Length: 496
Image: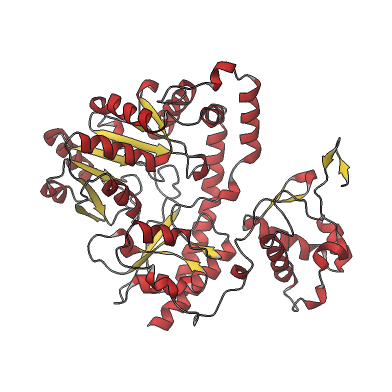
């Protein structure tokens, strides 16, 4: 094996005519960049180009293929936008990801057997929902997916090195089940700056994301004799499933243009409610002032509890921030946040602040579940926050996601002219609804046969509503957004 850099393996790729045995003469006229990008995608999918290898320099490859440098540069650019490559300055262009399969690179015709229809039921159970989430598609508009290619690898590695340089041996033992003190202080500072919440670090519990928050809170409430947690309707199917798994009922409460209907909440008789008030999922509505006042009155007078999922609160583009309920209702709110949308879901790091009555019980539930989160990632995240890197990442993501949001809104206007757009001012997704009388599950099933994956709005509704789709845009390039929405338009026209 050829070695350089003091014996390290040289993972660069042979350039020029040997590179993937490319025959540029096969490229269609005027489409050489897309042809080249497609050949590289196929090589990524079948692992001829493994993650970590370095591609030829654009100038070298262009010379050997006999094309302009712009052809190669544009091909690389498209693959970088897709999240498959990353430019690393003098280190060249590196492979950082790959499509799932080579077959996913060629969209099948609409006439492919519609097996996804069995998945897209109006009210999927947990097994069906998990099967759908696992379904592969070349263009994935699933909501809640951040741009994983935007993960700040260099800044994270720098934070990790600083942590390891000063790590004491004692830090490697069993830690506090509440989380490392360093991270709890960093989180307290973060939510004070960004969400207006004053919290003592001792009140913060570090968890494995919002999903674990729901499981732990659900267990605690059920043990306290609470039998139901009211849910926004429409509202998160995933959250509803977690609470039902804790043997809790989930009576629906209507969400309209001002947020949750507090009069309906009182009528359910539920002692607790799950809310996403800063950016309601999936409608994108902000809980308005009058409704906030009604909600505060409900909680104060009845002793009602609120599980506040601060979903997408930081990702806003065209509106001012909405204050967190926890900032005014500390005795009634379980406040949940995470870095899943700011950094990556794979980190599995979030936090919850319980009402004082439930703080110790919640810590016990966490301790008996897993003894606490892994310590090293907590210390690295604390360093990442306190160095200012998380704020810089958030500013970058806002610019980045705004461009993708705009691309989706423009594509919808061009290819889905009858769709009404909701919730585009913030978040990582938007929702569209239609006046026509068809099943949105049929649209989603037909789209999946064309390698475009979406969530039907009806999945997140407990009662009938107009058909719609929930479309995540953060994880897709502008090119894929345009292509995916175009496909949705074609599917819709064929169904009409």
